[in-house]
Length: 80
Image (cartoon, rainbow, N blue to C red; front, side, top):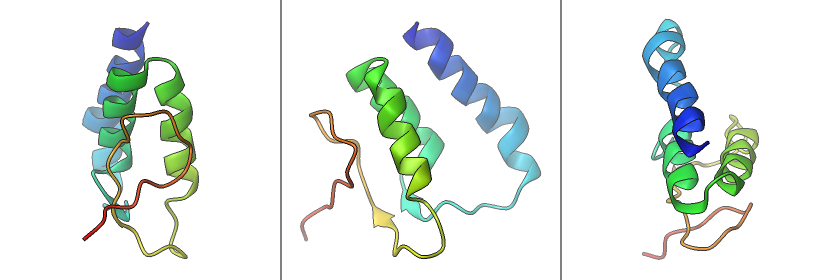
């Protein structure tokens, strides 16, 4: 199941995303975040990726937001 989900995201990255200008406000990008979340957390990683996409809009500051080691739908702020 993980391979299918990651394959769908990779299809998006290769064929759909290049048709639009870059707009992700976070690092890693939302699609890269989704792949890493699925690899770390399985199907629950999809929920994490969807939550990330929903908070990726012009009204947020953006910045570093790595995938946490534990399941969470909130932003994982990096301490400086």
